Image (tube, rainbow, N blue to C red):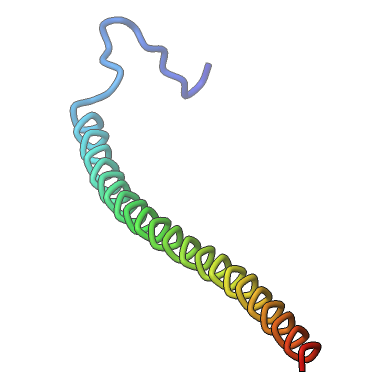
Length: 93
C-alpha cells in the first residue's frame, strides 16, 4: 500500500503538536458553546417573561368579556323592568 503508514503500538497516534492543536480547537469550541448557551438562557428567560405577560393580557381580556356579558345581562333586566313598569302604569292610567 503506497502512502499509507500502518500504526503499530510503538508509534504514537498523534504528535504532541497535533494534540496541542486539537486541545486548542476544543477550547475555542467550548468557549463558543458556552457563549451560545448563555444566549439561549437569556432568550429562554425573555420567553418566560413574555409568556407571563401574555397570560396576564389574556386573563384581562377574559375579564373584560365577562364584564361585558354581565353588563348586557344587567341592561336586559333593566329594559325588561322599565318596560314592565311602563306597561303597568299605562294600563292603570
